[in-house]
Image 1 (cartoon, rainbow, N blue to C red):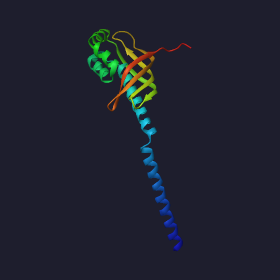
Image 2: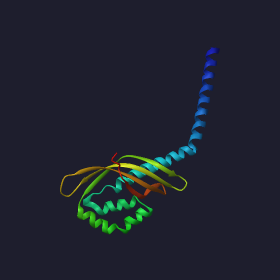
Image 3: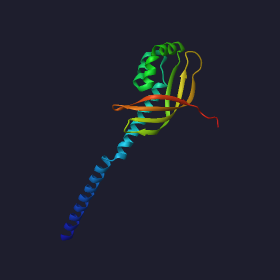
Image 4: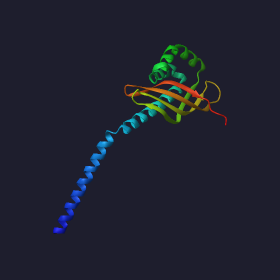
Length: 167
């Protein structure tokens, strides 16, 4: 009986010690600067991927709505440029009548300044284009993007096509 009681007390002490260590580890990790940085990096990557996919996709049947989406995904110089050229872009895109659907196949954050709220990323994108007439095509493209944090979201401030080397 006494031995059984000793084993129970030892088990209880061990369980309490494990709970204490777990709580301390969780508290340290929750306040960890590296963890906060990783969350910012992941958010910039996710928002950057979505933004690039939006800016490289267009439904020719609803150009105005897609241009509004483009503006929503951008800020700074890129947003200013899109606003300034929106009417002309809408006219050209409606005349062409090509629908594109883009998928970001891979992306990575190459720079992140969490304090200033800026980031850069690179991405590869598969773009399926369906012209009004003719056969659909699929193309692979590479982009470099700059992002700025606006409140709780990251938005594109620039989007540049990167030339693909021939080997």
